[in-house]
Length: 328
Image (cartoon, rainbow, N blue to C red):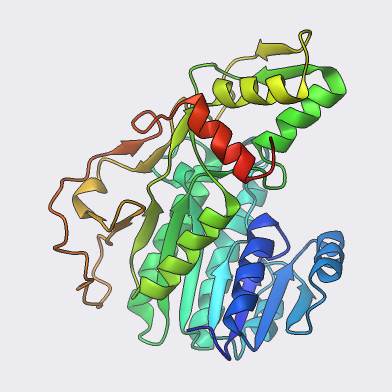
C-alpha cells in the first residue's frame, strides 16, 4: 500500500521514527518526510540512512504554517511528535498542552485540508485511565484523532496504543545502564511497579498493522507482556554492575501509577480480540464508518480491563526480550 506514496512522519528523527523509516523504505515509497525539531538527530539520521528518498525538515507541530508546507501532497501521516516524559509534563503542563494537544490539532487540521489518505496517531498506555498530565494530553489526542473521522470522508484517522519500548532514547534501559556505569547505583521509585514492554520492531509492526487494517475510528492495542521493573533492573545490574551495585527505592513520583492500563474498564465492552497479538477498540462516537472487519465474529471471548498486573512474565522471558534488543 505504500508503493509510490509520500509519507510524513512528525517527530520522525526519534527512535520510533527511525525504525518506522527503516521498515517503510523496504516497501517502495516515493518519498518520506522527516519533520522534527531535532537538528542533531536529523543530521545523525541522514548520515545513517543516506537515502535520497528521505527529506529532512526542521519544524514543530505547534507551527501550523510549517506543517501545511510539509503535509500538502502527502498520502500518509504518522503522528509521533510529543512531549513524552511524565515528570517534564507534570512540571511544565502548558508546554505539554501546546505540543500534545494544540500540536496534534494542527496535524489533524492539515491532514483534513490536504486530504491525506490515512492519519495514524501513536498514543500510549498512559492515556487509558490517566493519572498524569502526559497521559491526559495523550488521551485528548486520541479523542481528537478519532473524532476527526466525523469531519471528513477523505481521511481515515486511526490510533495505536503502545507500552514502553525497550531501549528507545531516554527510556528505562539506557537510563539504568547509565546509572550503573556512572554511580554504580540504580534508583527505582517503587518495587511493586509493573510495566508493559515491547521491542522497537514489535512497536512498528503494530503501527503498520493498524495502518493496513484501519478504516477510521479504531484504536489498535498490542497484547504486550508486562514485567516488574525491579526484575528488569536486577537483570541489568547482573550484566553491567557488580557486587557493590546498589538498588535504592525512592518513592513513587507525581503522575506515576503502580500498574499501567492498556484497555480501561469503560473501553472493554467496545474492545475486540483480533488475534493473539492484537486487540482493537471501536469508538464510542458514530464516525460514519462501517465496522465489518474479518475478526468481528472470529472470537467470542469477553475482553476485560487489561492492566500490566494481568500479564506478568518472568525474568527468563524478559531476558529474551533484552537480548533481542541487544541490551544483554
